[in-house]
Image 1 (cartoon, rainbow, N blue to C red):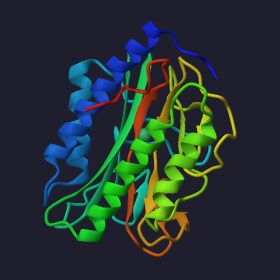
Image 2 (cartoon, rainbow, N blue to C red):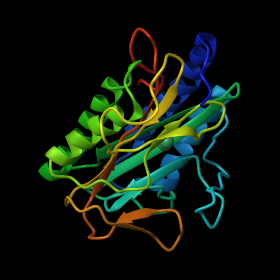
Image 3 (cartoon, helix red, strand yellow):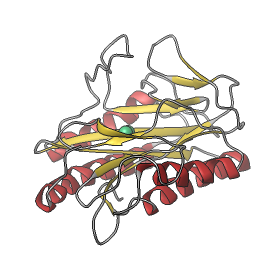
Length: 254
Ligand code: MG
Ligand code: MG
């Protein structure tokens, strides 16, 4: 994988701040009765105002049948990730995961948040709080000398010890001039294994948790949205993080 210079990491921080502002704006706008398309427009306006491009819009990986049509992924309740914003109006108690990216001056930031709209259920708050704790644990392990497996193990240990499932096959990744670079950063793994972490690596770390404790998921008919097999709710959190000799630097901090 490509190591970034400190100057490049500063440029990635600028891109990451646009993502952070977009997610904050979406979260502030999200309320009972607001549609997912309206949230997409909120994020799009933040990117436009910043002169940033969306790396999501038109993105067409090999697994997807169509280019992604939106600036955010909006995944509600049993949707884990990759939900396409549509006319669905948020209902009281919906658990929403929003993923957003921005490309500024050729550098990409990638981040996601989960939150509940309206009156939350206690089990959803616990799921979201655990997703945030798993992300913090993964970031804490993102230090020089550790390995990718240490990040994966830190995330997976928090999720499993809380009784949650982890969808295998999707997870974090390197970030840079492209949204998805090497190496993959799994959400579960063995400590001490994999690529050794060095100053200048930039990773998207993104735990995905399934509330029931089961791991099963499937793609919805749209070919993009991943849903839990048992209909239980899911949470997703993500930051773009630079590994530095002075510790992890969260480029998408809000
Ligand atoms: Mg993302
Ligand atoms: Mg990502």
